[in-house]
Length: 500
Image (cartoon, rainbow, N blue to C red; front, top):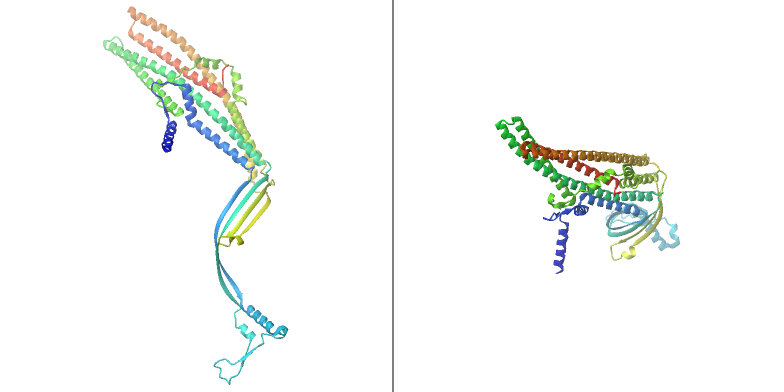
């Protein structure tokens, strides 16, 4: 039963990890898409992992404040082949002297043992049975000076060692390192928020584009129908001589252009839908499954906002982008501080404690074991390394200068980007205003053409051509609405605009 319960839980967890799919008949709102984006987007997940890594770097840096404790356990087998020389002559002489002392007592010192000996007749000696004196000295001379004895010893041993190293004084290098990694960690935390904001802007821009592109596609469909009817009328009139052949060719060209334009719009829609699926992790998103209407009043609010104030907000130290840049600048300054404290003649002081225990692996290991404890205070520093530390110091100074340059460049880029988007907003609004007037005029002209047609004074071709012109004006207006939305959302992101 417990195994079955675990299997069911594992299955449910696996289902939770599967990509979501847009259910048929349900509508995906902006909030639905944003929630899914926050949970599933690879860029956000990567930013979270980057922050996690930065947090671990901070912990590693702080760990240098604490003692570093390590141990070693080792087993060894020692085979020792020793050759021991034995001084035979010296040993024999000493033995004879000891024997004489034991027998003669104090008189032994009066006798030269080298001259003291025996008179013997060696076996087989036939020259009158003469005696041959054999002295101890001559006997010792017959011996070799040394005799080498080979001794083989072997035994297994085990060794245990525990060591501790505690930094006492490092001239602030550890603190500077901790400061550097903490600044990076804070920048990575802000990077998560920044990534979410960027993707939020991109999501709203995509949804606004789909909203307007869907209308453009509908208008193009109507224009295609009008163009097809116009081509049929033009070809019929050309055959009867009412219209020129060039007029019919021009009508066919217009129809072909509209067909290509609609294909391009549909491709753009498909591309955006795929991008939405990749961003949010939701599969099978369609135009029909999205419920989103751009807030055009918000676009006007952005357009009418105090632009100088927005620029100040975007470039102030409280803005998200500037906070990240300031943290990275502080990180390079901390790295330079660490490099300054690592220069020559700046020794580190540390306490070192080690304990070791060694014993043979046999039944008598207790009596033959040995142990020891060593306590030491060490000082280590660099006097000269060919100038590497000077290079490290210069490199750190260069990193600080580069960070300052990047910050200044970022401020200029923010100002330039804001100005470009404000210009795009102004141009889009101007074009929208122009197209509104143009659409009103074309609608009136179309109404007149339709009235003339009803009265028999006009032609169907003129009505169709006017409807195509009206469709083109509406498409132009919607295209500018897409530009307006993208620029307004970009300004919102860069300035963290929350409304007036």
